[in-house]
Image (tube, rainbow, N blue to C red; front, side):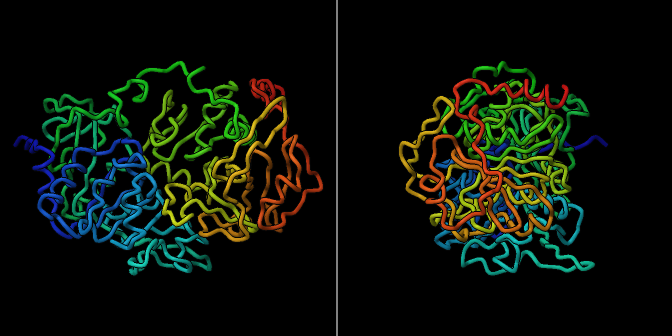
Length: 525
């Protein structure tokens, strides 16, 4: 008997398969990466018009949106959601605002954990056992990942196993998952030549094996059996309905781009350069913590410029940078489309990437900070009353051998001028970023010390490291006054290194640092 062909529905028809109280998994990442945009819009429109489906539980591993009105922001309608479990919230500020106003139960779990929760669900396992989140706001001894007062159910438990503390994240199985692929044949086999693999397969297995529904939005539909078998990422037996939408590029407002798909290599020698400002100073200093052969990770925010500076310095091919969405190598786009990359060396699934991260595979990670305190704790998830979320930050920061946190010492209107090997501070930021205690612990300094990690905090005017006593000042920018320009903006007194020195003058010069030549001498390349 021939394999039955799949239903090809409009987005509006497909969304009618979602019922009240369903658990709905939504794939994709910020900036429209692999986002099933047509399905999200259809769901938002149907609820606005009919009031159903209502009381949904929404799950998304990565942030979805453009920090404005796209992504899952259209789903920010009162009554549509009963609970939302998100890996990152900042990409959809309307949903974050509803969470802050207690309009549904809101949880924030690490991005890598959510992807593995899908995998556990598909395998009919009770949950995910992990050390990821120990000592942070996700630890049930703190808030257990609950990010508002409405969230009262404990979805993560502390377990002691063989004398060690572990976190157990309970499996949540989707009734429906919404995913996006590139090409489908009429039997539902899906390839992803234009898209990220993400956790689409794991989502589909989780829904299918638990009696749920898989709806896949694709850019084209072809005859059965015409996809190369090695290009198929979702087998047809997992898919219940196909939705054709030819309007999506890899990211918002961009048609299909063969540089982003990896088909072509781009000349990024000039286009990726960052002007000399506080951001470039920070990224340059952070890059100095890498060495040839390292495998690293780049986070969003200031840290996302690492690839561009590495390319400018000619060392991009001497070590490997990765992104949690599954990208290996290349240079990531910056801003809301962080993760979409040009000149990739490879791509794997998001759960596989996090297996590598969680197992300690990263030599160095470059992550941004919102604030850090005297104990070396870092907060990136909640500040100024704003819910941001962790994304992959907890997985990455907790398990890398070395972590370089990047950020300006103050925020809100800061103006500096790097010139002739020195730093001039023209205007100080309105907000201090180094309190005695952070508002929320996303990275735990005490746990990092116990794990033997090397931790640096790089700013435009000073470099600190995590030591046994807390925070130690180890470098300062040429041209700044240590007391007036650095210590005065800390709400605690750091240890001052016996070997305190000036930051490298090359960081503040408007020309390449010749890092490639330095690596050649030092490492005999």
